[in-house]
Amino acid sequence: MHTISLGRAETRSISIAAPPENVLRLLGEPRMLPEWAPAFAEAVEPADPDWLINPGPGEFRIRARVSAEYGTVDLLDPRDLRRGAHMRVLSNGDGSELLFTLVFPASVDKQSIGQQMATVEAELRAVRDLCGGPSAILRS
Image (cartoon, rainbow, N blue to C red; front, side, top):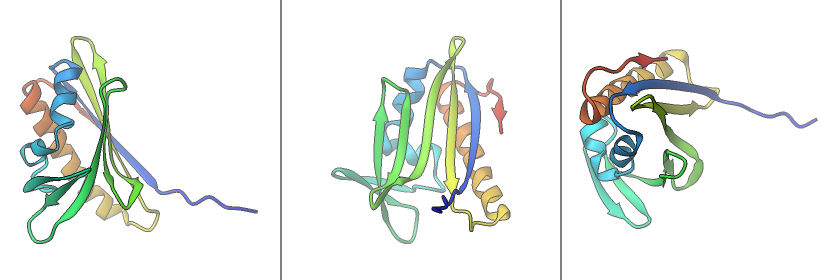
């Protein structure tokens, strides 16, 4: 019998008082990562087809996969395109709902996941502030 190993998926969402295309435009431009995700990227440089991320000491690559049609942005590990951050922008009235999902390996402890998701929540607030001001609601 083949067993399937699953990780732990964590999703956070935030309402943003801006149209989905504005939110997607911000998220889909890797050069903007330092503006809303400074803990992840202090600097970003193109390295076709990838992006070189500098989070301080050390560098790594990501591949940005953006679909305006589906309202998705995935920031993926080019060595394993199944791993990364997954974002979806949905219409919410006259504004947007941004969902951000990370999948953690089963071996990652709850405290580490909690710390990472606290960073994600700060990033969502930064996206909201850059796109539409502080009138949004953060949800787990």
